[in-house]
Image 1: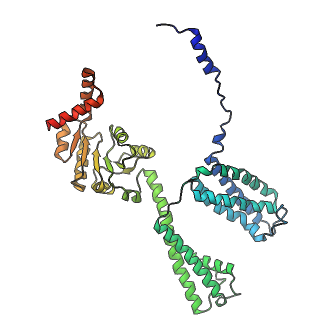
Image 2: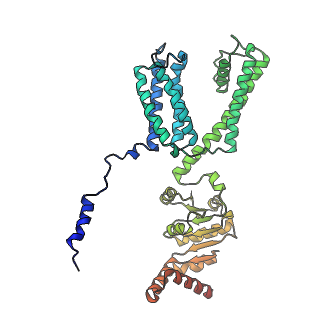
Image 3: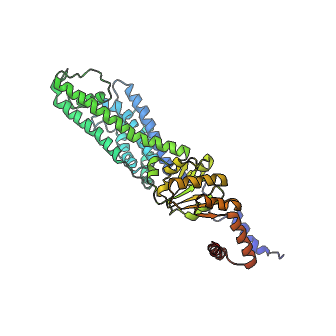
Length: 412
């Protein structure tokens, strides 16, 4: 062993103990990223709600802000503005958390509009809200590239939202056209909107009541169309969210995702060869892993692999995995007995599907073939053969594998 000269160690020691690069005391990117932007928008939402409650507690809000001389906002707008903005910003915050571009554009428009309220009243309780907006808006613009996800709506969701909008428009215009056929003073446009909302919501305060048969039939049509459209919209919009949440929690694919699978590879079971198999197939191959191991399903789901949590030997589960449209099936758990049942189940669902199996024990290879496996591999035997030939012949592993395949074909 030869000792290195001391001169060679000095630069290494200097690099370790006296690095040229400066380590920043504060990592500013951690405080100015997309997550911080979402948190700040959420803070603005809370402050807007609290400011709105403060304005609602006053019978007549004061107008001492710099914009009060230029804008004549009605007192009711100042009192309810903060609370209404808070509800809308709450939805926008959820959209920003999911990186939706439409939520980003809505926040760009809502924050300056919200700043008008504290600049009009400028009370002590308005100062935190104004400061929060001034800090949030530049950060929102700075991180505009992080919110680039589009909103993908199904045709049913689009139709549901259009139906609600159509019923609202129909009710508002119709109520205003029949304004003289209701009790009290003739309805204004705001009264018509109010009447439509309370009617669809089935609240019915009774402050506006139809007095003619035509007006009653009109109100009845709003109830039928409005409640129907609202019910369908709730199912179309909320249902997929609940389904996705449950699928994430249990590590399974949703029904809509399963129906899109075609010409894919179905992997039945999870074992020692699964990880190397997934690496070999790569990201360009559509595949789905069927396993009843919850821990393995969660790990695969976190890695971005399609997972269907279920029994690989259950034919109904294999139907959900769309074995009938699959390019092939791989059976490779560490339990040969269950793998035999999985092969039988796959062939029962589609007798023509190609099934490749990995037998843990060499003595089970013939059994796998007898139940319908098109190709059976024994990883342990192959591994031992490769190790022996590599050490004796010094041949590369790829060449040895090719020779092994040719010998296997010759034996058959």
